[in-house]
Amino acid sequence: MNSLDPRPDIVFVSGDITWEGILLEYELAKEFIEEFESGTMLIPGNHDARHLGYRLFEEFFGRLEFYKEIGNLGLIGLDSSEPDLDEGHIGREKYRWIEESIKNSNILKIIGLHHHLIPIPNSGREQNIIDDAGGVLDLVLRNNVALVLMGHRHVPYAVRVHNTLMVNAGTFSSSRTRAHLGNNFNIIDIQDNSIKITTFDIQKEADKVMVEFDRDNGIYINRYCSQ
Image: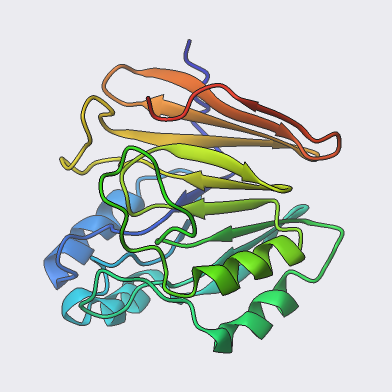
């Protein structure tokens, strides 16, 4: 089965578009990303912040953090990277801005960041959850955020926490794949208050439904999680 839509409404890139954050890598990344026909939103990963790369990120792609509304969706992009460190951090000083940005209860709220808020199965020894994960998770749940998009660990995974879907991306192009997971990306289909997450395997040119969640009725189907 292949339900890949060649023209998604938006492409969200959860960081690590470079390896060492250097100029040549940013130039190549920009060339590649400009080939997307859809609008693209990016946040930096820990690799992108190396060697003053966080400055190049802003030069090539704009603000490190943003809030944008697309139809009935409100998307916050957060910079969880720290220069020259693998660890992630958001910071209490941003919490008020985050809450102010998503206070509109009439839109479906999405937060995207590079590092993860929860442990990711099949990714080896647990490390690099953001150091203020508890505070950010509390903010997410109190404000009824529908979807949290994460990256970093190269493993596609999704799980429901209360009324929020936590979704981790695999790796699109890196050779640092895990076991037979290969290169892949997630397709997110949102219809009203229903969310379906499908993982697309690039080598096999095939997809698998990972999670379906009807937030109105609390119906949650976990079909596939990076096995």
